[in-house]
Length: 231
Image 1 (cartoon, rainbow, N blue to C red):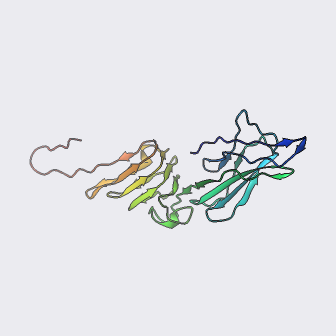
Image 2 (tube, rainbow, N blue to C red):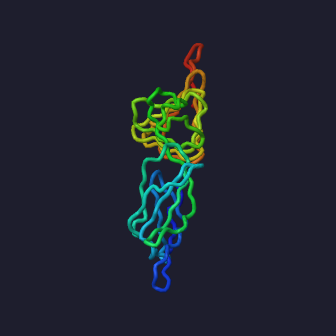
């Protein structure tokens, strides 16, 4: 995740209050939390609070909300569309007006599997966004009654399997995670299946947290006497 440190300065001149200067090094943190902090030598002293803005990529900025004090430097939001790329901005505010916006931060919201249609990973209706996931998607697999099964070449950016969740990769098919994979469901959270047709594949290019189960199919050996596979 991005660094959650940033800097904000205000301006007081000749005893009169001016609009605050813009926050610097704003960052978007985790799934739905905006964090803006200050170094020890650049403490804020002129803003009354902060305003937070967002827009889907290609859309128009709208204010999500605001903080009511300069001491409150976090803001939690909800209601954003799943699996959507958003741009975020923060402005410092006081009675004289708003600062210029801080740097624009871009990130994609996560999308949750719900299995409302069937167990097929590629079915658009099974996802909270109502759309099929892509290589850019950041996916959460929760504990639901219908678990996903991958029966194609699947890709995503990040994958998190919550406690009780389960993901199965069918024989000969694959899942490639270009970012991080976090499995909180133990060895049963991810199962890579195998049969006479072949074995599934899981490739992760980032951090990996948690275990999983990889099956390996061995055909029966014919002929007299005991036969063994060396694994």
